[in-house]
Image 1: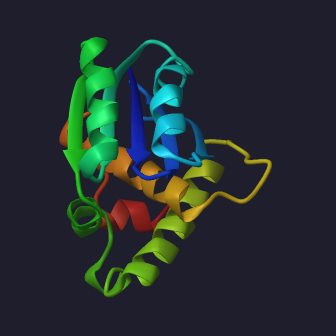
Image 2: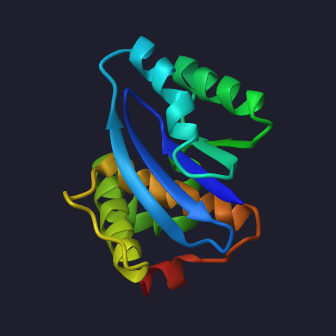
Length: 155
């Protein structure tokens, strides 16, 4: 099993996890328009195989394109909001404002990268960090891992 978590948008964050919950790759993707994004989705879904789960943070027309492509591949699809995963993974004091929550997400994601011996050629973006944490949320929901706020804070 491979799980792909996405912070949706024309500027998107992507994070892949293997079946034991280990983060194996993360990156950002910038699409100039919806047409370019729609054409890129199949290639992104083929980047790391066997991709079995798609987790998306967000909704709207962009989500519909991802969901349609995932359904064609018979993938398990989960959809959430930033508020939902933040409530489970961040302390209330860390998510009082959107910018504050993004900064905490960035700090946690960087610690996860280090803990998984992953390096990024460039600093990761807020979108990538949020995709990583959304993926952690999904892995918790699927009972693949169990990380609570205290355990995350110790990373």
